[in-house]
Length: 481
Image (cartoon, rainbow, N blue to C red; front, side, top):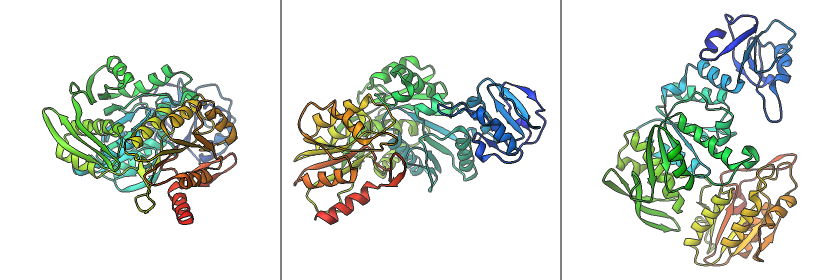
């Protein structure tokens, strides 16, 4: 491929060399560079790629693309751009022949509900006969093929490579989680979405965005690139987004004034039943995931699929067959222990409150919550989550989550600042905390283990260890019963 074709649509200046040269691959990690590659210098928060421009040249790079001035010894071309992240996104699309333009793209953003909604949409679209790709937190999918996911939304290079694989595999629709980080860091820059969905907005990621206003504005970027914006109008920030977004909009919620809505909701321990209404027609949905918030997830997902020509009957079939790992997942159904154990990914104040309120609705005995907070993340949410757990549970077992570089006990101390009652215990080791909750549980109690959900690992200061809560629960039950 010629460099000038790679840089199509990008404003740039040639500092050294020519744009009429052949290039091999694109890289933004100097350790991956091979002969005739193009190396993009990306300014990160901890590492500046410009510092590795010479290393990339020494590894055989034919071109260095940079924002700032670089002094390179060697024969490689140097291209200057105003924004290397946006340039990487556009170049990656060019390199793979604009794969996202060959797919129906559905993006979803919001604090909570993104993962569940992508699984719902994939299931609905597959019921309608489409081959579907999925990009998200738990895993990426090309039809039935599962690919490990290392972040909610991949970097633009890996993202376009994934889109290209989808196109080559006959995928027609791609549903993807679009994180606020990816929007701020231009990972999805240049992608046009057929539908963009706004789920909700509550406190999270302020370690990255610094202010809630920045967080909101980051989310809003998705809808500037969406043909139709699908908005949860019951959410406070959904109402604001409706006013701030230009172009076609479709609303969903529990109010009959919304275009897609739910009525006659019945929540129980095994799921939720409701009527889904759209354009004067309705269908009865029996969702196998409990929680009122999952009605919202179902409505937003249904709205996007309906706009893609799916029928209400296909929506019903898709929603009723969906399974989402680690989202209000009842893991005790295979054990005769007299109480329920639920694993959930809730790791923000709002999501923890949602899962506990949901569990409370079908708890006949006591509600026991096991939770912690991640290290190296927004510290301000820790006492808020502590207060939510202690207020909404009968017993809160405060423990470690993914402490990363922080000391677990320091994170726990931050959590305890928000707890004003005495209905909690501290068990720093997460496995022992789960065991303590199981030992405390009696007939008709419900245990909610929040924070990790689908994750099968734990990030410690100097290592990442295998930690699958389903396996741990099975071992503990075998040990105690």
